[in-house]
Length: 350
Image 1 (cartoon, rainbow, N blue to C red):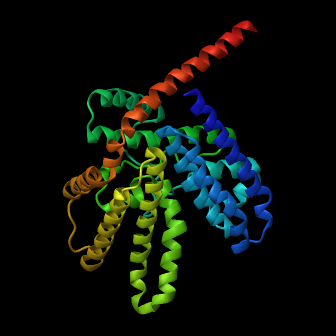
Image 2: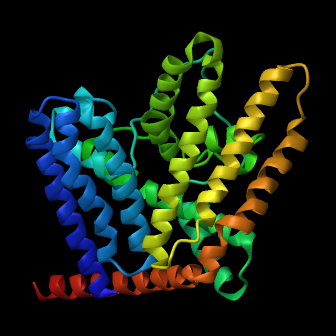
Image 3: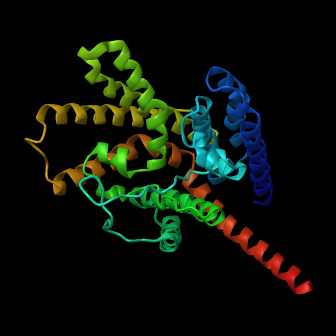
């Protein structure tokens, strides 16, 4: 664990140096294709960095944060778009680094009215620390009783906790109010559009919306003309799901180091097709016919879990990633305990 921690720290030092280059040098190059080419070495480096790690959780974190999110943010930055191009991030290096390297987003102020709700009720009101406690309990249970529902809950809580750590770190450092949770109770989804677009991992949905969906939609609107422009959103949605599938496949490779089976890619392609079908059905029926949430909710969550059992989780179980991840969590706890004991000894000596 100590050797992996050193490699993880070295990788983040490389990320820091790369983002300093992006801030001080690449930013001086005019936006567009020339800035994009200036960032190509950074894109390549960020793709290779997770290969320097050997454990599932560090590899997944670096792959998700840097290979996916940071690269996509820098891609937008090439054309002076996205969160790295705002005045808020441009005015200081530390803000640029934080917003590039971490999955954070400034909290949007919601106003009362037809388009905003000031106080939202949640079914399961868990804060950051209660999620940590529940995660540890479920992780211990999972070591004795491996079940798909437990794995789904652990994945949901793990993503929320990791993002929450970033929010606490950056929020306390910069004094900003950030989005507190990447997900919005996905178990309450009433449709696949609701699940993928508004409830599950909204940070990924947001970056895909700006880097894939909008450019593809705009391109097809210009190519197809007004007559067929209504199909442009369909092409945008399918492209976003294909890219998401390929990026998940890459992260699975970092974690498993096994030859890709493309099951994960097909999982997202399948869901992309189903979301498109939902869009077409809703367009044809309008508001005339709509399933009650008590029916559509279980159908949606059930479909996600069944297809996940079929295509998403097999690589995890086949390569024992769940077992290795549990070992990582236990090892990290012991490593953290050792670090605290060492610090206490040093303080006592002083």
